[in-house]
Length: 299
Image (cartoon, rainbow, N blue to C red; front, side):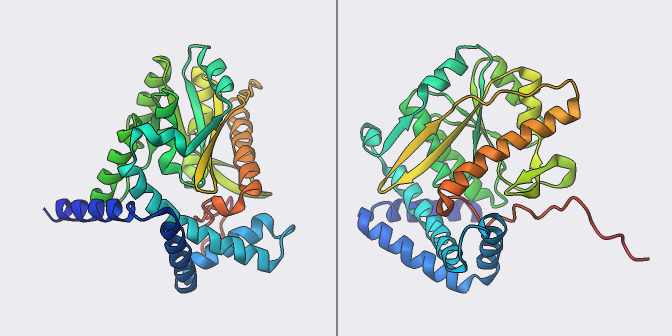
């Protein structure tokens, strides 16, 4: 009952925020982002440290701080935009979204093995199902269930509103993904978060070893499904979705090396977009948290 009440309160609040005029949403997001950046010392430092590790050799401390602040603003843009999308008339979707690279997607789908879509926490990734709806892509979305049940229900419903079919990362998820590919469906997977050492491999990300999930590489190698990147970029008051081109699956004959090389390639794609649009990537996540070594424990 408690979760049910919270679900309706938060759902109403998001829809209320979605009623704000565009300029008011932008101003509120900027102000709230500035405030959170000022008071949330923990995540501010995570963002600053991450940006320094990744881009410190090409940006000044002032530029890094400015980007980090805009990252916090982006978090609130996401909140307002999710509320806006909950009220968005389907007939007006094309007014706010442009799409390029569909030829690459259709070429990949023509192979008849489904498609693995490489996505990241970029701009407002929660709106990606809208892109699928616009071009009639019945995308399956692999996601980690949120720890708060009522929020998990809310976001799951919103992702499914435009035809996205969520696949939670629980036991049996890989089997469900493989079945979807075998039936010719596209499957989107977020590949830009830290994982524990037993879930991933250590590959370079901005010249630092980052433990990265092996799921996409394993699926690509087993299913022979083509892999395509897809990123949603915020452009002023709208969004531009970019597909492709297809990433060739590397096969050397060494199973371990194949997983590492393909996972490295996926990281490089995400790195390119995060470099080009640094204020739109999720720098507040501890991407390099899992280390490839640890001090020997004291007795």
